[in-house]
Image (cartoon, rainbow, N blue to C red; front, side, top):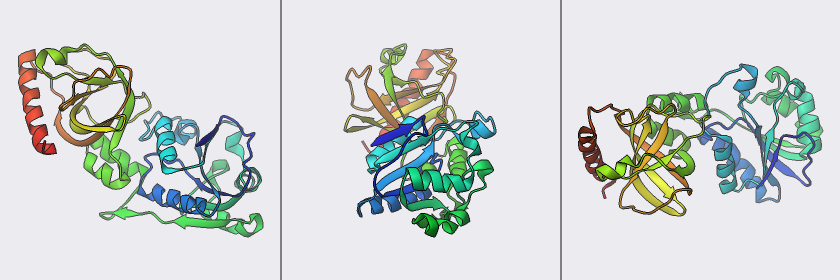
Length: 306
Protein backbone atom coordinates (compact mmCIF):
# COMPACT_ATOMS: atom_id res chain seq x y z
CA UNK A 1 0.00 0.00 0.00
CA UNK A 2 1.28 3.44 -0.94
CA UNK A 3 0.90 6.19 1.67
CA UNK A 4 0.71 9.84 0.58
CA UNK A 5 1.10 12.23 3.49
CA UNK A 6 2.17 15.78 4.32
CA UNK A 7 1.81 17.18 0.81
CA UNK A 8 -0.66 18.55 -1.74
CA UNK A 9 1.74 17.71 -4.55
CA UNK A 10 0.40 14.35 -5.64
CA UNK A 11 -1.35 12.81 -8.61
CA UNK A 12 -2.48 9.24 -9.18
CA UNK A 13 -2.34 7.73 -12.63
CA UNK A 14 -5.28 5.73 -13.92
CA UNK A 15 -8.85 5.38 -12.70
CA UNK A 16 -9.54 5.33 -8.98
CA UNK A 17 -12.34 4.40 -6.59
CA UNK A 18 -12.15 6.70 -3.58
CA UNK A 19 -13.80 6.71 -0.19
CA UNK A 20 -13.69 9.80 2.02
CA UNK A 21 -13.88 9.96 5.81
CA UNK A 22 -12.22 10.18 9.21
CA UNK A 23 -12.47 6.40 9.72
CA UNK A 24 -12.01 6.54 13.47
CA UNK A 25 -12.87 3.08 14.74
CA UNK A 26 -13.30 1.71 11.19
CA UNK A 27 -16.75 0.38 12.05
CA UNK A 28 -19.25 -1.62 10.00
CA UNK A 29 -20.62 1.49 8.32
CA UNK A 30 -17.11 2.38 7.14
CA UNK A 31 -16.67 -1.17 5.94
CA UNK A 32 -19.56 -0.81 3.48
CA UNK A 33 -17.64 2.03 1.82
CA UNK A 34 -14.39 0.07 1.85
CA UNK A 35 -16.13 -2.98 0.38
CA UNK A 36 -17.45 -0.80 -2.45
CA UNK A 37 -14.07 0.54 -3.52
CA UNK A 38 -12.49 -2.89 -3.15
CA UNK A 39 -15.18 -4.24 -5.51
CA UNK A 40 -14.18 -1.50 -7.95
CA UNK A 41 -10.56 -2.63 -7.60
CA UNK A 42 -11.59 -5.92 -9.16
CA UNK A 43 -12.77 -3.93 -12.18
CA UNK A 44 -9.33 -2.38 -12.65
CA UNK A 45 -9.57 0.77 -10.53
CA UNK A 46 -7.16 1.64 -7.75
CA UNK A 47 -8.76 1.52 -4.30
CA UNK A 48 -8.02 4.80 -2.51
CA UNK A 49 -8.82 5.89 1.05
CA UNK A 50 -8.87 9.67 1.58
CA UNK A 51 -8.54 10.60 5.24
CA UNK A 52 -6.66 13.15 7.34
CA UNK A 53 -3.28 13.35 9.02
CA UNK A 54 -4.73 14.50 12.37
CA UNK A 55 -8.16 14.20 14.00
CA UNK A 56 -10.30 17.03 12.60
CA UNK A 57 -11.55 17.88 16.09
CA UNK A 58 -8.00 18.64 17.22
CA UNK A 59 -7.72 21.32 14.53
CA UNK A 60 -11.19 22.82 14.38
CA UNK A 61 -12.28 22.48 18.02
CA UNK A 62 -8.79 22.25 19.58
CA UNK A 63 -10.02 19.07 21.23
CA UNK A 64 -7.60 16.65 22.84
CA UNK A 65 -9.94 13.67 22.61
CA UNK A 66 -8.24 10.32 22.15
CA UNK A 67 -8.53 8.20 19.01
CA UNK A 68 -10.27 4.85 18.70
CA UNK A 69 -7.87 3.94 15.90
CA UNK A 70 -4.43 5.53 15.73
CA UNK A 71 -2.94 6.43 12.38
CA UNK A 72 -0.59 3.45 12.65
CA UNK A 73 -3.52 1.11 13.29
CA UNK A 74 -5.46 2.54 10.35
CA UNK A 75 -2.51 1.94 8.06
CA UNK A 76 -2.26 -1.68 9.14
CA UNK A 77 -6.01 -2.35 8.76
CA UNK A 78 -6.22 -0.70 5.34
CA UNK A 79 -3.18 -2.56 4.08
CA UNK A 80 -4.54 -5.90 5.28
CA UNK A 81 -7.84 -5.16 3.50
CA UNK A 82 -6.08 -4.59 0.18
CA UNK A 83 -6.29 -0.80 -0.16
CA UNK A 84 -3.87 0.43 -2.83
CA UNK A 85 -3.34 4.03 -1.76
CA UNK A 86 -3.91 5.80 1.55
CA UNK A 87 -3.98 9.60 1.48
CA UNK A 88 -3.41 11.25 4.86
CA UNK A 89 -4.41 14.73 3.79
CA UNK A 90 -2.68 17.52 5.74
CA UNK A 91 -5.04 19.73 7.72
CA UNK A 92 -3.77 23.26 8.29
CA UNK A 93 -4.84 26.90 7.90
CA UNK A 94 -4.42 26.72 4.12
CA UNK A 95 -6.08 23.39 3.35
CA UNK A 96 -8.99 24.10 5.70
CA UNK A 97 -10.10 26.94 3.40
CA UNK A 98 -10.39 24.83 0.23
CA UNK A 99 -13.90 25.29 -1.14
CA UNK A 100 -16.07 22.16 -1.54
CA UNK A 101 -16.22 22.67 -5.32
CA UNK A 102 -12.42 22.96 -5.54
CA UNK A 103 -12.04 19.85 -3.41
CA UNK A 104 -14.10 17.86 -5.91
CA UNK A 105 -12.74 19.39 -9.12
CA UNK A 106 -9.08 19.93 -8.19
CA UNK A 107 -8.40 17.07 -5.79
CA UNK A 108 -10.86 14.25 -6.45
CA UNK A 109 -10.93 14.71 -10.21
CA UNK A 110 -7.69 16.40 -11.33
CA UNK A 111 -5.27 14.85 -8.84
CA UNK A 112 -6.95 11.54 -8.07
CA UNK A 113 -8.84 10.85 -11.32
CA UNK A 114 -11.88 9.61 -9.41
CA UNK A 115 -14.16 7.29 -11.33
CA UNK A 116 -16.08 6.23 -8.23
CA UNK A 117 -16.62 8.16 -4.98
CA UNK A 118 -18.00 6.33 -1.94
CA UNK A 119 -19.13 8.23 1.15
CA UNK A 120 -21.66 8.25 3.96
CA UNK A 121 -24.87 10.17 3.38
CA UNK A 122 -23.72 12.61 6.09
CA UNK A 123 -20.32 13.27 4.50
CA UNK A 124 -18.94 16.81 4.79
CA UNK A 125 -15.86 18.35 3.18
CA UNK A 126 -14.33 21.63 2.14
CA UNK A 127 -14.42 25.02 3.87
CA UNK A 128 -16.51 24.90 7.05
CA UNK A 129 -17.69 21.43 6.00
CA UNK A 130 -20.07 23.00 3.49
CA UNK A 131 -19.62 20.21 0.95
CA UNK A 132 -22.11 17.36 1.25
CA UNK A 133 -23.52 14.32 -0.53
CA UNK A 134 -25.83 16.52 -2.63
CA UNK A 135 -22.84 18.40 -4.04
CA UNK A 136 -21.02 15.14 -4.76
CA UNK A 137 -24.00 14.00 -6.79
CA UNK A 138 -24.48 17.39 -8.48
CA UNK A 139 -20.93 17.43 -9.88
CA UNK A 140 -20.78 13.72 -10.74
CA UNK A 141 -21.74 14.14 -14.41
CA UNK A 142 -19.46 17.14 -14.99
CA UNK A 143 -16.48 15.38 -13.39
CA UNK A 144 -17.32 11.93 -14.82
CA UNK A 145 -17.56 9.84 -11.66
CA UNK A 146 -20.29 7.73 -10.08
CA UNK A 147 -21.36 8.13 -6.47
CA UNK A 148 -22.07 5.44 -3.87
CA UNK A 149 -23.74 6.74 -0.70
CA UNK A 150 -24.59 4.78 2.42
CA UNK A 151 -27.15 5.52 5.11
CA UNK A 152 -26.31 4.97 8.75
CA UNK A 153 -26.36 1.33 9.82
CA UNK A 154 -28.24 0.55 13.03
CA UNK A 155 -27.73 -2.04 15.73
CA UNK A 156 -30.35 -2.58 18.43
CA UNK A 157 -32.04 0.65 17.36
CA UNK A 158 -28.91 2.80 17.59
CA UNK A 159 -26.92 4.25 14.69
CA UNK A 160 -23.44 2.81 14.32
CA UNK A 161 -20.97 5.64 14.68
CA UNK A 162 -17.55 6.44 16.05
CA UNK A 163 -19.29 8.33 18.88
CA UNK A 164 -21.22 5.23 19.90
CA UNK A 165 -18.08 3.10 19.87
CA UNK A 166 -16.28 5.72 21.96
CA UNK A 167 -19.13 5.65 24.48
CA UNK A 168 -18.92 1.86 24.82
CA UNK A 169 -15.12 1.86 25.18
CA UNK A 170 -15.28 4.54 27.87
CA UNK A 171 -17.74 2.35 29.77
CA UNK A 172 -15.59 -0.76 29.39
CA UNK A 173 -18.28 -2.50 27.31
CA UNK A 174 -15.96 -4.37 24.98
CA UNK A 175 -18.44 -6.90 23.56
CA UNK A 176 -20.60 -4.20 21.90
CA UNK A 177 -17.42 -2.69 20.44
CA UNK A 178 -16.80 -5.99 18.65
CA UNK A 179 -20.40 -6.00 17.41
CA UNK A 180 -20.03 -2.45 16.03
CA UNK A 181 -16.67 -2.94 14.31
CA UNK A 182 -16.29 -6.66 13.67
CA UNK A 183 -12.92 -6.50 15.48
CA UNK A 184 -11.77 -6.67 19.07
CA UNK A 185 -10.56 -3.38 20.48
CA UNK A 186 -6.80 -3.67 20.46
CA UNK A 187 -3.43 -2.23 21.37
CA UNK A 188 -0.31 -2.87 19.34
CA UNK A 189 3.16 -2.08 20.55
CA UNK A 190 6.63 -3.21 21.44
CA UNK A 191 7.01 -5.38 24.53
CA UNK A 192 8.94 -3.35 27.10
CA UNK A 193 10.62 -4.26 30.37
CA UNK A 194 8.52 -3.88 33.49
CA UNK A 195 9.38 -4.40 37.17
CA UNK A 196 9.17 -8.20 36.66
CA UNK A 197 7.18 -8.55 39.89
CA UNK A 198 4.77 -10.88 38.14
CA UNK A 199 7.40 -13.60 38.07
CA UNK A 200 7.73 -13.47 41.85
CA UNK A 201 4.05 -14.42 42.24
CA UNK A 202 3.99 -17.01 39.41
CA UNK A 203 2.18 -14.71 36.99
CA UNK A 204 4.73 -13.31 34.51
CA UNK A 205 3.38 -10.63 32.20
CA UNK A 206 4.27 -8.71 29.07
CA UNK A 207 4.05 -4.92 29.11
CA UNK A 208 3.00 -2.55 26.34
CA UNK A 209 3.02 1.23 26.52
CA UNK A 210 -0.07 2.37 24.60
CA UNK A 211 0.08 5.34 22.25
CA UNK A 212 -0.70 8.59 24.11
CA UNK A 213 -3.32 9.27 21.40
CA UNK A 214 -5.17 5.99 21.98
CA UNK A 215 -8.46 5.93 23.90
CA UNK A 216 -8.20 3.51 26.82
CA UNK A 217 -11.12 1.69 28.41
CA UNK A 218 -11.52 2.14 32.19
CA UNK A 219 -8.69 0.87 34.37
CA UNK A 220 -9.33 -2.76 35.15
CA UNK A 221 -8.75 -6.41 34.33
CA UNK A 222 -9.95 -7.77 30.99
CA UNK A 223 -10.05 -11.09 29.19
CA UNK A 224 -7.94 -10.79 26.06
CA UNK A 225 -6.45 -12.42 22.98
CA UNK A 226 -2.80 -11.89 22.12
CA UNK A 227 -1.27 -12.01 18.66
CA UNK A 228 2.46 -12.72 18.53
CA UNK A 229 3.45 -13.05 14.90
CA UNK A 230 0.95 -15.49 13.42
CA UNK A 231 0.25 -17.20 16.75
CA UNK A 232 -2.87 -16.53 18.81
CA UNK A 233 -2.88 -16.88 22.60
CA UNK A 234 -5.35 -16.15 25.40
CA UNK A 235 -4.63 -14.04 28.41
CA UNK A 236 -5.67 -11.64 31.14
CA UNK A 237 -4.84 -7.97 30.69
CA UNK A 238 -4.60 -5.25 33.30
CA UNK A 239 -5.06 -1.73 31.95
CA UNK A 240 -4.03 0.87 34.48
CA UNK A 241 -1.42 1.99 36.96
CA UNK A 242 -0.75 -1.18 39.03
CA UNK A 243 -1.51 0.69 42.28
CA UNK A 244 -0.45 -2.15 44.60
CA UNK A 245 3.16 -2.20 43.42
CA UNK A 246 3.73 0.96 41.37
CA UNK A 247 3.24 4.70 41.21
CA UNK A 248 3.04 5.04 37.44
CA UNK A 249 2.33 8.41 35.83
CA UNK A 250 0.89 6.84 32.66
CA UNK A 251 -1.26 3.73 32.25
CA UNK A 252 0.22 0.52 30.88
CA UNK A 253 -1.25 -2.56 29.21
CA UNK A 254 0.08 -5.54 31.15
CA UNK A 255 -0.89 -9.05 30.08
CA UNK A 256 -0.50 -12.55 31.47
CA UNK A 257 -0.50 -15.12 28.64
CA UNK A 258 -1.71 -18.65 29.28
CA UNK A 259 0.68 -21.51 28.50
CA UNK A 260 3.43 -19.19 27.26
CA UNK A 261 7.01 -18.78 28.45
CA UNK A 262 9.20 -17.10 25.84
CA UNK A 263 11.38 -14.01 25.79
CA UNK A 264 9.67 -11.54 23.46
CA UNK A 265 11.12 -8.26 24.68
CA UNK A 266 11.37 -5.83 21.79
CA UNK A 267 8.85 -7.72 19.64
CA UNK A 268 5.63 -6.16 18.35
CA UNK A 269 2.54 -7.69 19.96
CA UNK A 270 -1.18 -6.99 19.59
CA UNK A 271 -3.46 -7.33 22.62
CA UNK A 272 -7.16 -7.63 21.75
CA UNK A 273 -9.49 -6.74 24.61
CA UNK A 274 -12.50 -9.05 24.69
CA UNK A 275 -14.43 -8.47 27.90
CA UNK A 276 -14.24 -6.62 31.22
CA UNK A 277 -13.59 -8.83 34.25
CA UNK A 278 -13.13 -6.55 37.27
CA UNK A 279 -11.90 -3.06 38.20
CA UNK A 280 -8.28 -2.40 39.11
CA UNK A 281 -7.81 -2.68 42.88
CA UNK A 282 -5.14 -1.50 45.30
CA UNK A 283 -4.38 -4.49 47.56
CA UNK A 284 -2.90 -4.28 51.05
CA UNK A 285 0.06 -6.50 50.16
CA UNK A 286 1.54 -8.80 47.51
CA UNK A 287 -0.03 -11.91 49.05
CA UNK A 288 -3.53 -10.50 48.60
CA UNK A 289 -2.63 -9.49 45.04
CA UNK A 290 -1.31 -12.99 44.31
CA UNK A 291 -4.48 -14.60 45.71
CA UNK A 292 -6.69 -12.43 43.47
CA UNK A 293 -4.55 -13.04 40.40
CA UNK A 294 -4.70 -16.79 40.93
CA UNK A 295 -8.47 -16.47 41.05
CA UNK A 296 -8.36 -14.39 37.87
CA UNK A 297 -6.31 -17.11 36.15
CA UNK A 298 -8.79 -19.84 37.11
CA UNK A 299 -11.80 -17.83 36.01
CA UNK A 300 -10.00 -16.96 32.78
CA UNK A 301 -9.52 -20.62 31.94
CA UNK A 302 -13.24 -21.09 32.41
CA UNK A 303 -14.00 -18.08 30.22
CA UNK A 304 -11.79 -19.34 27.38
CA UNK A 305 -12.53 -23.06 27.92
CA UNK A 306 -8.84 -23.97 28.16
